[in-house]
Image 1 (cartoon, rainbow, N blue to C red):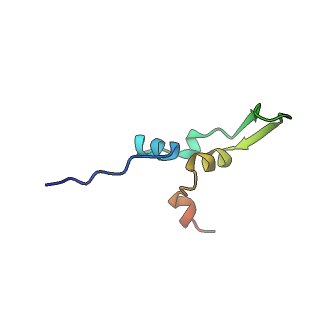
Image 2: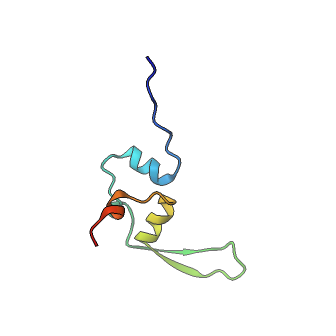
Length: 71
């Protein structure tokens, strides 16, 4: 009998969630982070919020909480 295997977690977001079933993004991400992009000719400091960091890690994998939350 063949056992179906789950697809490997591709993104950092999927790996974090798969590695910790109790993963809570509100506890994982800091309120804000400053970062400096040295890959440009005119580096500028940028402030990234927890939502910005979460969206970057999700890479389009929207959480069900956000998708179905009441507005």
